[in-house]
Image (cartoon, rainbow, N blue to C red; front, side):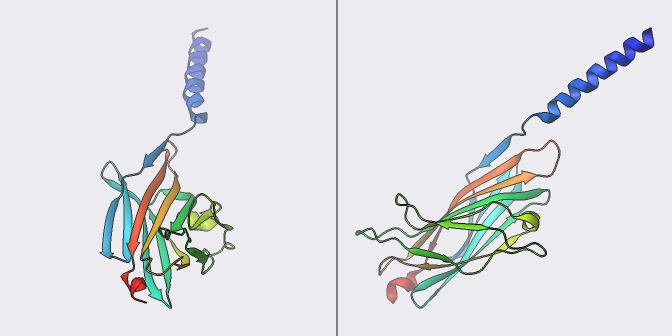
Amino acid sequence: MRRRTCLAALGTAGASALAGCGTVRSETALSSPTVHADSERRKSLQFAADGEEIGSIGADGAVSDGRIELSTEIWHREGTSVESIELHVWMPPAPEGTPAEVALASPVQGDSSPPPAVTLSTSRDEPGAIIEIDDLDDLADETISTIDLVVTPGYDRATALVIDSTIELDSTALLDGGYELDGQLELEFPALGQQ
């Protein structure tokens, strides 16, 4: 009889322990990144939690024929994967409100899977364009360095470019939650104002 009581108690304890496994893991929002600048046109945002770097987004641009050719790179620590990326790329509009035009210059692709679907959209309420990627397949575990953009200023003398980024990371550890990396990267291209 004691054995049955002991087994029942162990079964109840095991069920209680497993009950927590179905709960939603919490997500940590990181929105105060450190800005690292190699130059006015090459910068990165680095996100950290508890003194450990979690991820970063960097951009490097050059002016050619009155346009900005922009490459971005997204890095994340081992043990995390990228769930989604949203980049809002814009230039402060002219007094007459002419927005910059943003185009995707190359597909985002990984080693073995087909390129993920990329949504490029504009909004009446916000200048520039919004780039969204949410099914990264084999790219989810890699450094993503193949998002290349071409940005055409909406007016002469526009020299500032802004990237508002939101990157969702999931942790591969069983009990760890994910991360939401939110930040704004501002780049300057004085050469645009001289053309």
